[in-house]
Image (cartoon, rainbow, N blue to C red):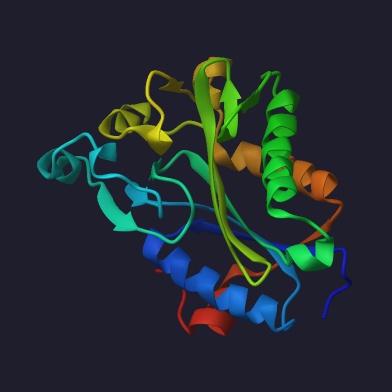
Length: 234
């Protein structure tokens, strides 16, 4: 087992949402049994609407045929929150952490995730913050990062999705996180240039490690898939 302040980070590329759930379930079990250290999974998803435990029937605004035309699937998930869109150009981060080992409660954990993104965006010259009563990160009245987590026996899964340069049209198909009257934005829109997910990964890792007080070490994606699921992501 790695030292207690170590967090293995895995760059998984593009992973189907259902496969990411399978992987997270396996890693949560392994972390709870102290067979692996804390981990941070970085990935993108093909276009998908995920409906959390608090999802409401009216959260998806578009008819099924419109979603089909855009190649967007709909899946239920065990994270908190309502409906969220994931797609290419969005950097998704799933920490698998033992909060008991870190001495963290749920509220503090959420605040640290938000701070990770706020600090990251600050490094790009984007001033971001929180919107009282709604988890996530906002720039003015527009959401730039959605947050939805699951905690079981002190072990975290799911996490946050940062809009780097996704297709913002797709957010019009939903009532994002159940919030009306506020928009959605991205780093690319705010910066005025086509920043890529690849450019944001290193700053995100630096911010996450500093905010959580963890030393990040790179892990091999193929070995992770083989050990946990028996097959690669594809």
